Amino acid sequence: MPAHGSEGGRGNRAGALASAIAALLAATTAVAAASDRIALGRSIAQDLTARLKARLMAGLEGGGPESAIAICKIEAPALAAAASAQHGARVGRTSLRVRNPANRPDAWERGVLEDFERRRARGEAVEALEAHASLAEDGRRVSRYMKAIPTGELCLACHGETLAPAVTAKLDALYPEDRARGFRAGDIRGAVTITWPE
Ligand code: HEC
Image (cartoon, rainbow, N blue to C red; front, side, top):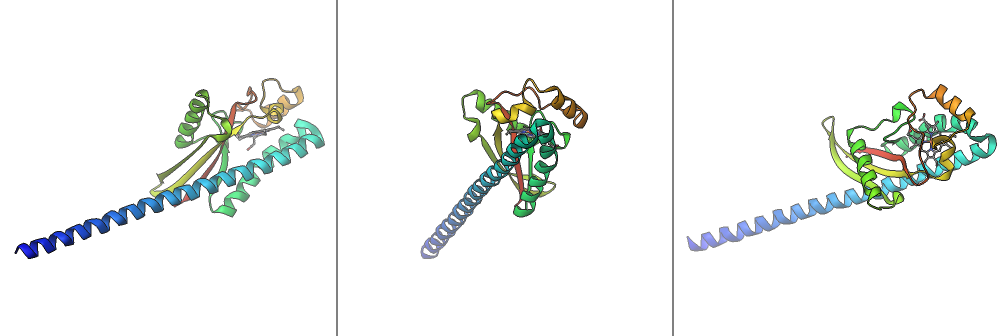
């Protein structure tokens, strides 16, 4: 009996070790998956922001803010849709103060945007603000990523405190619920938001 008992003990120890290793591997895989998502999210966000900025600058040079409004209205959702198709994800932009109501944040996004504001108030650089989570959505697990979009000088022609009368008139006509005015350079204008199925 003692021999049997000690064998059983060894068996239990081996079993415990195996499940500890399995748990460790699962945790490591989860961490690796999360860091892959963060790296990918970062690059999708940077790419989208850079493309938009380039289009915006070309539009502003070509016809001024009044005509560049069309670029933001048509090309921003088109570029986000292209990024979504390319990465099998849902890619968009959101903000605590949206211009287009279609960009309103959901509960998780709102919480992250509020956290970004707190982190900025504590002195964190807006460029570095990002968040990642694995969540249940409609009974499926999804991976989510957000990256803050800083307000630059370039943005103020359409999101700043004083807008040209022609810009105000066009925005009033296109976006009667516009809340995306009154920003200052350095403020958080919003965030790129990405959701993948897991
Ligand atoms: C020429 C005017 C114009 C300029 C300049 C401009 N935007 Fe916008 N922005 C818009 C319009 C129009 C929309 C609404 C787009 C839509 O309908 O989806 C918008 C929407 C957004 C949104 C999506 C959230 C929302 O409010 O609906 C973000 C984020 C944003 N802009 C950031 C920026 C940043 C950052 C800059 C500077 C790099 C910038 N914008 C410069 C006109 C402009």
